Image (tube, rainbow, N blue to C red; front, side, top):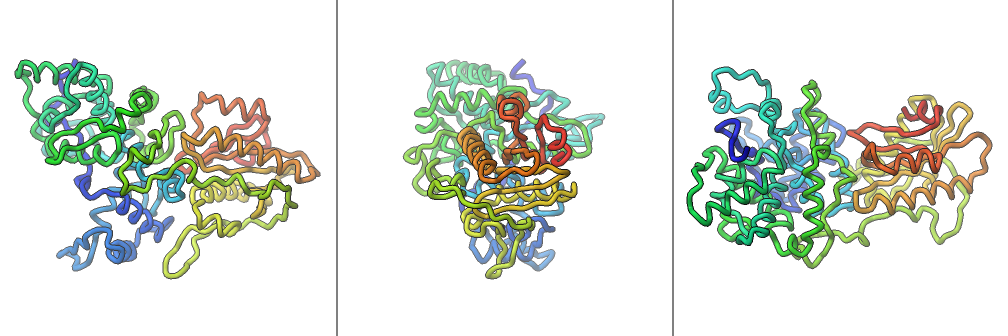
Length: 490
């Protein structure tokens, strides 16, 4: 029972670059990664971009005689599931969340708040064992910090815990604040999200009688300082001027019920990633952490509640691509043979550009294009003929006497149902526009995993008799009651 802890060195290790994180840094690092996307990181190219755009200090290294900001700061992106760690993938591999942000489907505030709330221990990124931690034990049978934390029953999301502790303190009639000392002595002892209520009560008791019998955890203080800076990035918390105290923000209080529901959802056992012990557990972590969970809402949008120097994007400003037809009039379909979406060289820098719709791609269709490529490659590998029309259909395939029409949508938890409805209407209209000369399958493709218990699956596959494709850890998942569709996409 709380506050018992499994080992003395308990802490919440996190990047020490918390203090430099900002929207310009995150966007700039993502843009720098785009220069080598799908290739091995060229540190010289990326460093030149970072320095020329004044993103970060040059970080000149005496050992190499070279500027190497990338070497130090890349962990900001991998820490928050924006890219796969370069220790996991030799290629620069951006996650769906990163591409959604680059496309403008989610704002910086939505991205960072979601990832800071979702951040958990154990995870597949913080896997290295500290020699000083191992020295605490006579015998240490664990091969990674991830395995060690799992064996000690840790399953916690720090940002959610801090929000819930503040929620319970306020409910107890206590002042809306947690000090750095209280973080180091009490909050870090939470092994699971459900420990938040007892933690709040322990803090309340200490504030009233001044005696707790607990000592600060010495190795936790630096990490607690970094966590306070991270929490302050989100609109949910406010950090005191001296950086020693965190409180719920006016935004959290105004959207109290919405944020509570998000925290409760993020406390459900099924919402966590679990260490499997497999050799690929690190890769699995980034696949999990870098994607949307459609069961978890993004923070409520309200421009007035977010700092004026941020570029929060309202739902009405998000790019939608339901207007392929234009003017409400049906067009004739003019197919061209499919060519993979490429990364052409342009003005000295490379950007994701779709050959089937250059203008829209420049406006932001990176995640959409990624999905089209994955589906098209799967179809081509199976021997299908694949086509597209830049004005209408995302993907059209002919395979073994059948034809297939697929509409692709990039989605977030907040726009999924709207884009589902849009996709259904579009694919049905394309079906109407094209005279069928052979058996036809209609498909809907979405750029996030569909929960296995979601009503969407039977609705699409049984009620609409369509194929449902989704993006899961850079793999294509197929749900269909059609044998030929499963053969083509599977």
